[in-house]
Length: 518
Image 1: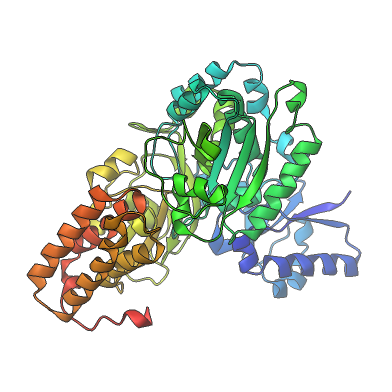
Image 2 (image 1 turned 180 degrees about the horizontal axis):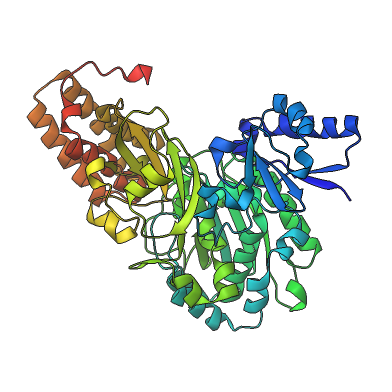
């Protein structure tokens, strides 16, 4: 029987040399006559250890990392195929502290399985949630999702069950499930990781959403920058269709649901649900005014559920283990688990899934291990390029939607980007305004014009032109953008700007602002 050696196919791992490692292992095995099967799995999200190679031994899966192609000869010499000692030896995969301390519900199989093997997925209790859902009424499914407390993981935190209930009750001859996989925020990679490492959980979640709402067609709208995710999702859809999981007779139930992948064209604003729908319809990616809500008039004017990848991927475990099981994790109104993506200047960057409630300080300093540079942490931005900058004095903030909102912050897609004491927050504030100016769809004046004026005001501040007046103008601009913009792009840009100005006032003293070098 072949010895299974796991080498991640995840884009982050590939960028670090995983393809070369997989090729080197296969060649070495062939030259030595070792009976090895190289399995390309997803990543566990411990990127400082990637490429991480695992071997299936009699004592469980043993990990080595980070491995380069140059390490392969010494790995074979150390008899790593039986779990032999080596300088890169990490022990049993499940016992690695970063992984062991997590509560993996949504990502419970990611890294363990061959992403496109339905047999592997079933082996780890995949499709159990769908099988349970097929025995329930649509109303019972919606009730379970509502009672679980699941909220939109894309950033808005809107209760998923309420959205599904609205679509379920909307009269229409055709309804749709649209998965928003346009993951454009800085420091976020959870959507990509799960599409590349465990695509069947997204397929299962979308089918359950279809059963709950009466939708028979689904779309995954993702970025052109994610070619591996697109390829793996398409392959998994074909496998699911051939196995009767998708199509006209879901698992022999007589129920109908099918889906496909749609690729975006690189517009950040298409992460906003109505811009996304316009893009899917072949129109320019411009924000739609609400009402009507997409739940009533969405894709092609029909009732449409638009949910984030992680929202939909959280549904199978709720249907598998029950609403109360999921609800028991978390705090306050933030129930269940959240996949926190730790990035930037940090020692242990990666994905960490846990129940809501950890403090920001615990995430950055204990889980993330502090800065990679070894210098003090100065600021942490949570929620992508439009998230607020939190100083160390606010590290006691619990990771919770309401707690962040109380401190003029937002969780967003749960990206956490760490900066050491060399960061210039005036430059970061300017970047936020410039980013908004470049990415604005142009439909509303506060976003289109306000962001350009904001960039100019920060430049004047840097030159020392009447600082008090410029700060007053910048504050007024941010107020106008926050409450007058049609969507979150213009509405959230004030968060990084005002948090930088409020918490790091010393960075806004006059100086030469060399933005061209950034």
